[in-house]
Image (cartoon, rainbow, N blue to C red; front, side):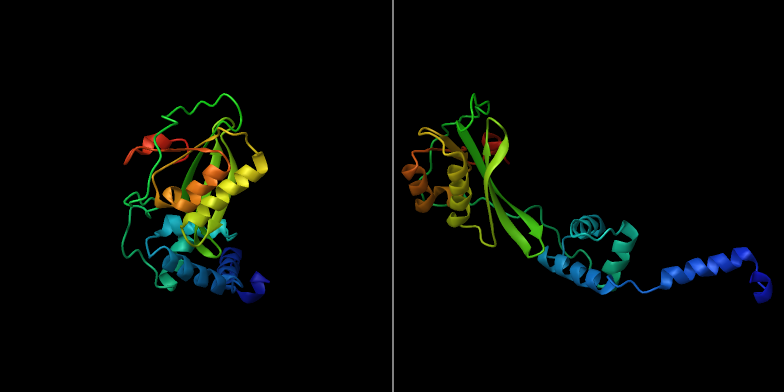
Length: 213
């Protein structure tokens, strides 16, 4: 074949490889759309590395070079950076609990003490808030809840799951930061109804809840 065409084998196979790269990718348009969605949801704070991780988590095995090319085609670049998204609002007038746990993270038995916190994660539905409850004895998640709004219902649902699954005895300690969700009347009532002792970190001291932060 190469003799008939009058080309060397090396040049022939090089041309074949170039043509393979030119074949249309059926997922290309999907990837462009996802790049735009992720960029918008992150307020354009994602660079190539984090964009690549986000696409990989969605099931697209792209590398850094491909991600960079996709971002360029989608006209996406980092516009501004923010250190973190605030998930704790301790500037409120609601009552708070004393630090009953006092950094005693070594529980002697299951369902002796739970620690809770709120974070936010990227999903196919966009950014969602995730509230988790961890048993200090096993260090495993025993309750969780996810929603688009960071309110009292979010943390109540997470603790309700833990209480329903574990059915702890009276005297369980629940520790969290001083966020308004945990200080809310709705959450405090949930603790009282289930005979759970509330505990909160000291103001501005993340180490008081270091296990789950």
